[in-house]
Image (tube, rainbow, N blue to C red; front, side, top):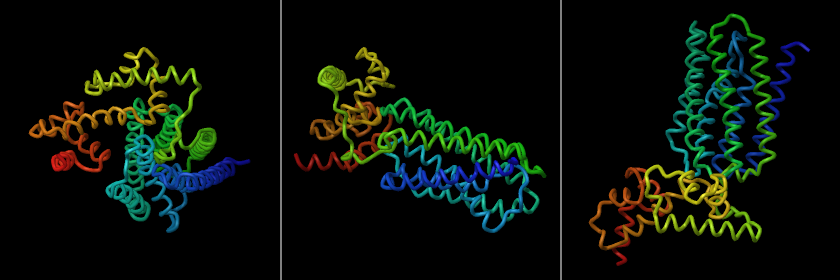
Length: 352
């Protein structure tokens, strides 16, 4: 089998796997934002598998250019997917769509006019530099939110998914930049590209079939079923839960600067993984920061409803409860209660 035939077989297998993965995601998780973004990312990756080429290739046709543009825009979808996967409170905004549209439009213009005008090297470098930027953003999101994730399997699987995808995205972009403007098709690079992509897609598909999707994608709260431990384990866990809640209620450790799950685990004299599992499976939280913020917001609600604190500025109440600034407090408070702190205070003042 020639290298060209092998490359074509690998590309075909990758596209088939990605289409199957897309169908599974849309069947099981179409109501979940991270599931829809994962399906969109899989479709964009299929477009990439069809169009990816290192070095010179045939002239870009009218039907080929839109596929290349969608393939380029897929890196934005990947970034948004990591945001939604690792941040349960993440919501799409209009400007996210604007960023995606801008990247797709820029790639299309590159294919149709900039590259054919003799600026192929510059066009390729610019597009793939954008890819590296969004890969870096996705990796930063993964690293920055990893410690607060309480879902053990999601902690492991997400690192694999993002690391593998980022590795391929980075490798492909660097190869594209290295051979930008090359007058020959770099067969070994294209074969390597196709082989790595096929291996990663196959590994992701296999991994997702082994893991409960509800642990990877955020499901509605009413659908969450907390684990029921054995009687002995339940009694031990309950003692730890009681001790944890005493730290929250009596010592108000959530007020402390830079409190981490490691800090609480040390106070309770248990390993971090056990405390993560306890807060996740016994208390129903998927994110440690949400757990802390809920305690902070409960304290803030009590202060805002207290007539004796009617003149205390909202920012003072927020800082006393453990928030570092007013913006995150306002967003977290409204997400929890449905109203702003000021509105909440007015409602409570009217009730009194």
